Length: 337
Image 1 (cartoon, rainbow, N blue to C red):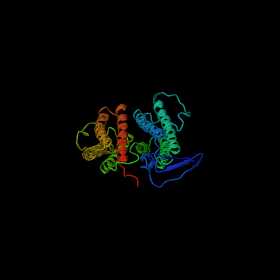
Image 2 (tube, rainbow, N blue to C red):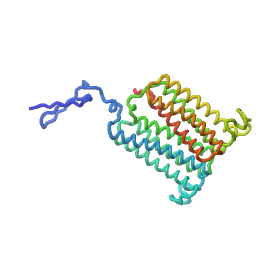
Image 3 (spheres, helix red, strand yellow):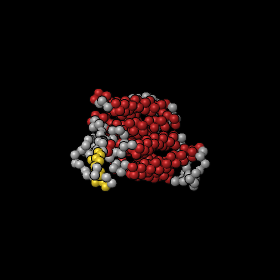
């Protein structure tokens, strides 16, 4: 009887086969180190690549949805469809004027729900060990359904400020979740950087950007965008007379914008001084440059009297900044136990 012994390269087991009858035995002594991808439940090859491609699509689609939502409001199309979930009693109205933007926004949001559901199913079937990704996917579906209800309520109750602002807040929370999912499928998903500097800077930046975005949503939905009609001053002063709620809210948005810039630029300085990882350094620089561009866009929005291209790009850039900050934080997370 001839024995044939085979060992799984880079794996912990050895098998032995005898003729047509197979007997397998497992050695407790490792042949080599376990591949990091398998050690952390990440399947190599096409499965992980497919999941990552889907999550890339989800992230880009979400950013486009946020841009569409901003265009809807900037063009005064929020109530172009006076009913919900239909539009003038049908699912396919005539796509003209404001109806085009509002109904396209609804269709785009519906497609996003389908995409996230598909991504969660693919994760479950191809990467069963990645329960973290599947759980995040299910949470994302829940957020999108809740977001859809909020969108419906904004129409039914004719754009109440609190619900409209909550609508954007949930959208940004979902964007952050989608960013985390994408980063967790990246090349550093198995062994994180454990970079305290990047983690701290990214978390501060993400928190400040999110808070500033909510205040910005309040400025928009309370029609306070021209509360300070001049730039860079407000009513001709560094600190305006804060006697009107619109002026108060608009000025708060400007002050918070300055605070975000200070936090982000200081965080970038620390990362460049203490972190060697080129991706983190690149994210930090992009974040700092983006914040400067965002301030310019904010001033341009006022200077051009809230023209849709300026205010819509302002919202989109806020979303991109949040994505960068969350990506930086997630990459620098603590390693798994």
